[in-house]
Image 1 (cartoon, rainbow, N blue to C red):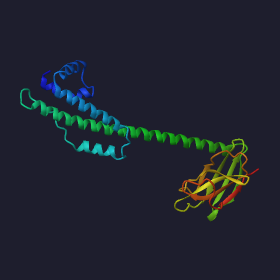
Image 2 (image 1 turned 30 degrees about the vertical axis):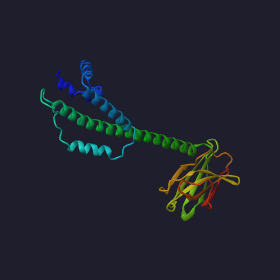
Image 3 (image 1 turned 60 degrees about the vertical axis):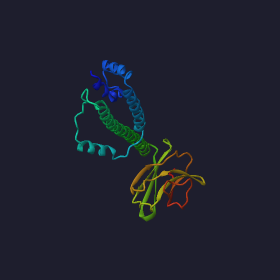
Image 4 (image 1 turned 135 degrees about the vertical axis):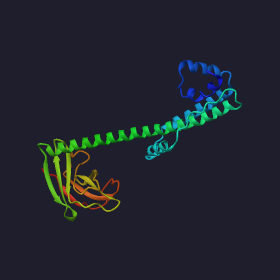
Length: 249
């Protein structure tokens, strides 16, 4: 391998892409070539900074943008400096640096996309697991041998039905024809424990016919209520209940 060839290996050396014999020869070259040694230090610092960038969450459109740019860019063959020409080694190192920077930028971008995609998939799996668990618990309440049902009329001709299972210590609330809440509002469910109201979760404001598992145990609750609350819910009811449904005995 000629000295001119060795000048072009700084990027491959930093990325650990050299074969063992090439790496050993290049390291011997570094001992006598201050220019290559300086370039290796600069590229190693760049690799470290780009590695930190991988941990950042990229915007959703980044992957498609990079793919479109790759498809539109013409790929040039590598330029090899001729031995003996003045300034050839310097030009080769400059081109190598630009090419490596582009490769590292693309690697960081796709690395970030990979991290983002992995996180999105993990979040989706966790959401699916939570939904499946809630569906299983709802089915257990509805199918429980001691399940008892009580119904009441709600505002606007809607109807609400509560199903209580003391063996499961859970309750489910089913609605039909319930209008969407006002903008910025949400329906909130409550357990009535004597004279106190205990939050039992929020209903999906986009769904008018719903079957939800009320959050928390039934315990000593004797009834349930539904109110209109600000988005995100309230610690205690801020409006009169649309209905107060007594639990069946």
